[in-house]
Amino acid sequence: MTSTPVAVVASDAEDQPERTPELEALYRGFEREMLIPLWTEIGDLMPLAPRSRAVPHLWRWTNLLPMAERAGELVPVGRGGERRAIALANPGLAGRPFATPTLWAAIQYLNPGEDAPVHRHTQNAFRFVVEGEGVWTVVDGDPVAMRRGDFLPQAGWHWHGHHNVTDRPMAWIDGLDIPFQHYADSTFFEFGPDEVETREAPDRSRSERLWGHPGLRPLTHLQPTPATPLLAYRWEHTDRALSEQLALEAEGYRATVEPGHAAVRYVNPTTGDDVMPTLRSEFHRLAPGTATEPVREVGSSVFQVFDGAGEVTVAEHTWKAERGDLFVVPSWQPLRVATDGGLDLFRFSDTPIFEKLHQHRVKGDHQ
Image 1 (spheres, one colour):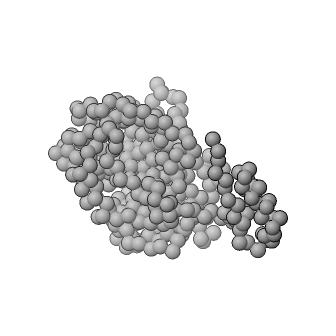
Image 2 (tube, rainbow, N blue to C red):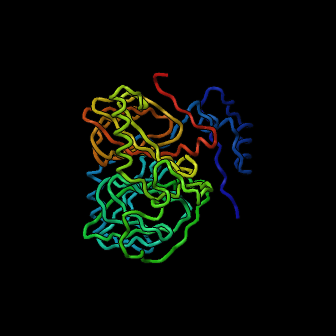
Image 3 (cartoon, rainbow, N blue to C red):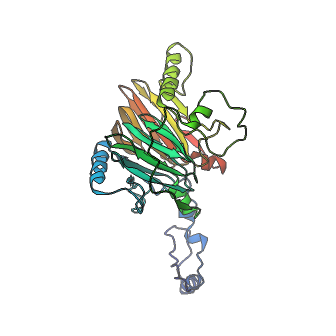
């Protein structure tokens, strides 16, 4: 097998050597031997600060949902396509179905009575429900109900499928680390049964009965797990935690990260760490009249507006974001959010990857 030579293109930087015939001959030799000199690439490979190929972008829920509904009419779900999932494609990533270089986000749509067949993959995944109910997901035989506001993590290499037990369609967002594992050449995938077991989910899954008791850990299951064994983080618990933070602040107790800004992180109950090794998930609530300070961090994030409305500024881009809208914050791009009437935001990011590599960094413009 022969390789295609890679052309050496010298940088336009002022400190590049003069392009003499001798240097041109040297560069052609590099190309024949599949070599590239660092001095022609250092500006791209080692910039002074992160320069993400992804760009800030916002997707309108009012545009996404009708197209997902139309896909439900035209596109069957089953083996081959596996899921009726429509990925957010960042305009800066050359047509790849990636929200950021490390994160996948998609709207998934399931018609009444449909099964999304069982499979498993090494990618870590979750589902977040912005509206509706009636679908249940089964993970390794444990059926879990999906309802508005629920966060449903599902670590890599676990069997899972979905079934809509109602007479109404349902849509939600999927988040995965597909781009990260794709670039790392570490993915595996395996098919399971074509049909999902068609009994309804109980009010509480087995995972919730064992792990869904705040502050309590079963002594019969002490071994830490790399990803959370809890398959559903219910909205009523998230909502209450955020409301209590703001209530305590109103009572004079400084309980929030900044005035009027309550936030929680979904964690693995066996370790207290992130729910999955490559994904961090959070929920943020901004009280009416609140504005956050601009902040930038290494790593990228995807946000979805759960409720309310606000003004979102990422770098030089500013949008009015409303319920269901999704927006992406690339690495080291400053983010500021403001709201007049209040705003609830779900967020997921690749932060655990960079923390494990000791490359995570956060900087507020006020610092």
